[in-house]
Length: 443
Image (cartoon, rainbow, N blue to C red):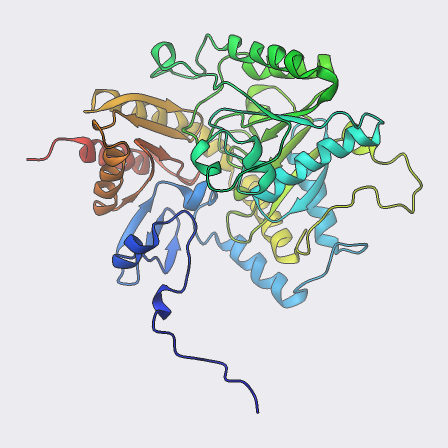
């Protein structure tokens, strides 16, 4: 007798255990979206909400982008799945070629994964394996940075710099150290463009490397712009100094561009915006417009070549995932690059960025605002916390914005913004006017 396909569950509506969510509070008042288009989400009852977060930093070309939707549909009907273990499909190879051409000069290879978290853990493994392949297996130490976010894998958590994310899951990886955050609010608040005065924070890498012995350090990983930790742009010259120190000591430099990649700063990657090329770049989110899970590690030719010294029939890197280079994800990735080319997405964005920065900085006169930080189409509005109730003002501002039809993200007492790159001047005005109204005193 066949087992039944269904059984009655008294909590059926609550069966979904959601990520980063207070489940009991959410289930009391759930927020559900069942469709989206362009700059907006739409609830089941037809309420339209302006998306100030591009989903979760990822829907860069706007929701339901027709070329991406059609590419996924066509791919699903042609090839639903093929492994990339000792085989693959044509779109994986052609997309890899296009993606590397989109990336900074010197980046020649890509290892496909399925998320930003997997990209980070893969990059850290490649870094250690690179030194091992070159006969320098003592190089195992990894250096991250305060307030850095690098996903939820054990490797990414270990190098990340947000304590609350770690406290329930330790012990994490040993042999990890952290740089200070290169930001001083007293001297850098409300900066226009890159702040000055942060080179001491870069020179801290030299001190840290000497403490741990340069011959034992494998890699340094940083977000070019700190994202989830609060949108902190790099000080002028900071990333170049990190590159210089890493080169001096034979240490790999990894840029985590899961957020900043695919146009967020007005260039394909932050590495191009800041003129500094790392050895590896992690990416995800915007590479498929959020439509299909995908990530990647972009790799310099020098790093790749270090693995190719053995016999040609040997597997050079014992690492990978079932869904690496999934056919639907590659189709979406191809279509996303088509949108960049055919719609001049970067040109349109760069025309809007001055309006974005001006709108953001107007909030400095709003109640409780202690800092506004922008980098490309990213923004953080930092609020003074209420005495004894940290995070309450940020949560209230988030809720007031949502009630007025704008979705933002609250991270403690910081409001974070990252809308789709197709945002126009009217959208920008709506976003900052809504936040300003949310911060205004109530009667």
